[in-house]
Image (cartoon, rainbow, N blue to C red; front, side, top):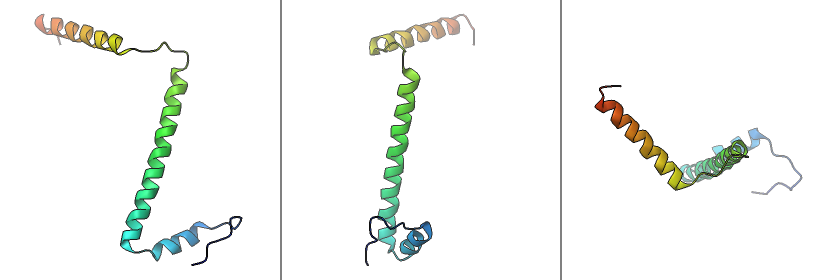
Length: 85
């Protein structure tokens, strides 16, 4: 099958007609390729958004997080001991 020239635009309908000609194995490979690419794009976009939201925020360190979790656990433990929710 002849490859289109780089400047030639392929329509979605043309792509779908080509996909219809693929074997089931080729369709699985295509689906995996598209899924992996989409997932990677979404992951990069999510990371970019998180970085944007964290701009100007102080850096978190594991020790601080662990200390905070322990403090909350102790508070919850004390509440349960007193019969609270």
